[in-house]
Length: 113
Image (cartoon, rainbow, N blue to C red):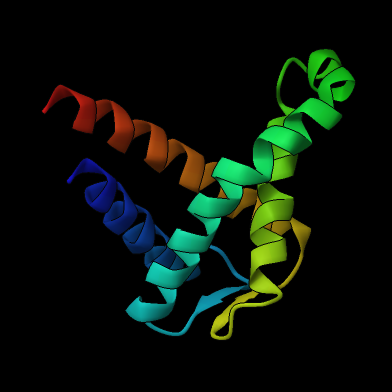
């Protein structure tokens, strides 16, 4: 149940992001659900590999390079999902930052329930 709630919260956040970030667009709620699902799968499978491969850069930047990895994953997902468009790196970076904050807040509040 908590996984579905987190998925829904991330989809709603992705649906709200075009109103906050110029250069970011999502056609409808169904597309936002698909994007949230694909991003979740990418974060579970690909992100740990990328973090290990970029470990020296992560150590030097005190872990802030993870935000760059998140931005590239969002940008990459936008290349193959129809109805989801990210204009470049900086909109993806801001979207990744907002998604990280919302996910962190929702995960900590869902654990309390």
